[in-house]
Amino acid sequence: MNQLDQLKQYSVVVADTGDFLAMRTYAPRDATTNPSLILKAAQAPAYRPLLERVVEANQGLACSDLADHLLVAFGVEILRIVPGRVSTEVDARMAFDSAGTVEKGRALIARYEAAGIARDRVLIKIAATWEGIRAAEVLERDGIHCNMTLVFGLAQAAACAEAGVRLISPFVGRISDWYRQHTGLTYAADDDPGVLSVRRIFDYYARHGHRTEVMAASFRSTAQIAALAGCDLLTVSPELLGQLGESKAPLARRLDRAALDAEAIERVPVDEESFRRMLDGDAMASAKLAEGIRQFCDDTDRLERLIGAVAG
Image 1 (tube, rainbow, N blue to C red):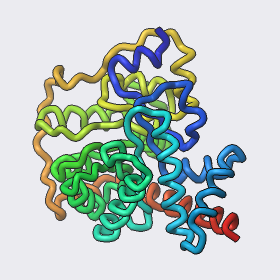
Image 2 (tube, rainbow, N blue to C red; image 1 turned 180 degrees about the vertical axis):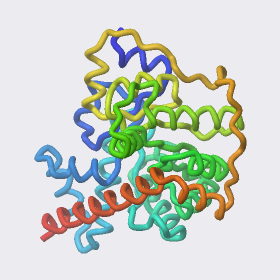
Image 3 (cartoon, rainbow, N blue to C red; image 1 turned 120 degrees about the vertical axis):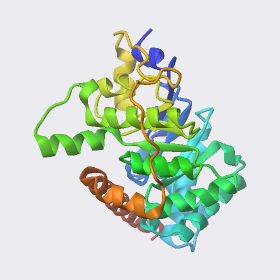
């Protein structure tokens, strides 16, 4: 088997793209999107008709509302291809607004349901700020499942699990980027700071009985992916999916909830003061979370300008 087929024996493979036309080749179970990926797809000529249909069907709405309709339109098309779930992101400009995030999450689910999509096939994607986690806690009680994104450390992961969220997305590559930039070092996969962060979160969840799924994200290489084989889910770009599909090198399970490392990990306090202190004390996590929110906000602004140009 190629490495992609081997990987599917140990982890659920998720396509990390808005380019749903490219998904069929790799047969992922789920798919994830974010404002940056949707912006990239919406600019491609192949998706111009979808953008125009959304604008035409919702004339008179503000660009921010049209953007939500476009996100759902992409999600609906993706769900025609994947048998599982799609993740659709709440406007990152609400990253510190719990009430606004709850309202937006409910509105996105309502649009999916109006399109005939059951809510259990959708994950509402929310930045893992304190306010975002509190919003996800409310949405989960409503039966709206959440994917907490921009996770860079154990403080965020522990708080998400205690809030009962369905899934988290720790960002392997962005963690590695920060350490390479600040240390000048190059890391082998088993010593990679992003890989080690996900392994620690995975082990923590297993030891403390958390049922929240871990979906490692933001990969820079197939070596990072192989080092996390066995993680609950892995969301991978089409480029790296293609590389896995072309390789016949052996790929072994590296993570297993039933076979934990010897080191015990004490339970992390998840009250607001402890959360903020731990996050602030982690230079990498605090910097990358802020950077990720800024990037998604910028790309949301760009997406709205693109929609506005089409709407005239």
